[in-house]
Length: 180
Image 1 (cartoon, rainbow, N blue to C red):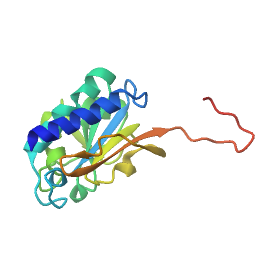
Image 2 (cartoon, one colour):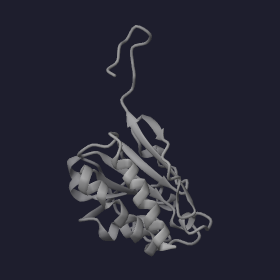
Image 3 (cartoon, rainbow, N blue to C red):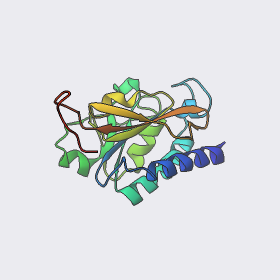
């Protein structure tokens, strides 16, 4: 199962890297139900082993696109986010006092908290793009105009995957002109 998950993540990351939708310094939010990846009901069978495989599989996004990974917690922490302290400080985000654990925060956020450099938790963010693994509802953490992406790889393990990017708002009406 872990080999399939690794392969699925690698395919999705490869598809992301082929796009021009993420750039140096972008915030990239990941919502992930490791239970759904394992084929179970969200919130019932979390696995930090699955989280590890996904976390490691996302590293090429950081290496090749210099994005900042942000990991969404589960509903028990109101979908707060795990982020590196340097980015939290740079963006002047207010930290909250909590440590995600598998049963309150989720296995993915718990794993990220332990493995990001100097991790901290914040309540909200406006990310440039993201990956929703297992219908975890990352939309609340994307910038205003989210655009779904249709990748060939549609699952990680047993979980559905939705990728999204954002774009600036189009304003001005019918007479306005926009760059192509």
